[in-house]
Image 1 (cartoon, rainbow, N blue to C red):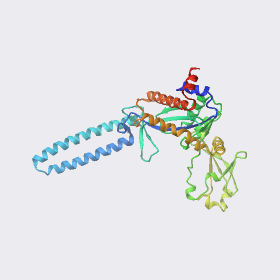
Image 2 (spheres, rainbow, N blue to C red):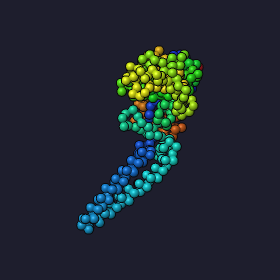
Image 3 (tube, helix red, strand yellow):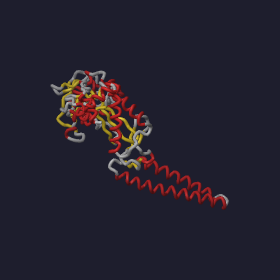
Image 4 (cartoon, rainbow, N blue to C red):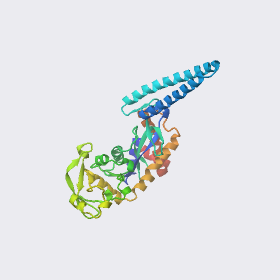
Length: 361
């Protein structure tokens, strides 16, 4: 698979230097009922306890029936209760295993498969998260990866660097959706030649309350202050709030004097003063937003580029998706699928004979 991408690179197919990255969940050879998390174990224990309660109530009623009927029913109900208590013991043992597992999950058929949420409400599957970086010009999959971590949040830099190495581009623009937004990941791309373009998420609740949002405050990098909607300057305080590490600290900007007599204060904050927080490495996010502003079609290109290959691969693989088990084998299986996809794309681009000639040279 990697050698075929090298062939595509030799044919100068990655000259546009733009890729789109996305992830999709693929089913593993592991039924949902054979995957356990703490929540699932608790829910199943509750179901078993409820069933035992119903059978005990039925046992009490059986005692009031004629002796010949009661004896037959009592024997049957006791057998069911004994079976349920065995299930309860097994679930309690599984609960202890789940608690001891590093990621809090146990899968019985494929030990590497993990329960993952999907885009549909209340849906999910037991499987793998397949990542793909797709060339925006010819729609070739230049890099891919398979992980059993359901979130895309930590995949931006790894996939961007894989795509850069595969394409040989010194500078590579990487388009991704909001699921990839992570300041740490964008910072990891800094200085590597990978230029991520990921839209920011609007996490503030100010807009819902009719208040000014952070976007209404304009930052001046040269003077290191914010200008609020009233035209006042918010300057940086001496103290920082640490989130997790020193490199993850936040600076706080405010102007108490201006806030006290501001006519726009009812539209700004219900507290004494409005405070704007800024990550110490916020500059990399500002630079990324600048790239997005200069490329208004970025998300449209992303959708058109990276989403259809996943649909094609899933159609080829069938409703069950993966046929193999464990992460190593699943990665090999996906590599074969990606190789087949890229070969069919190249046949569409060049035709069979020119492609064979290129492979032989």
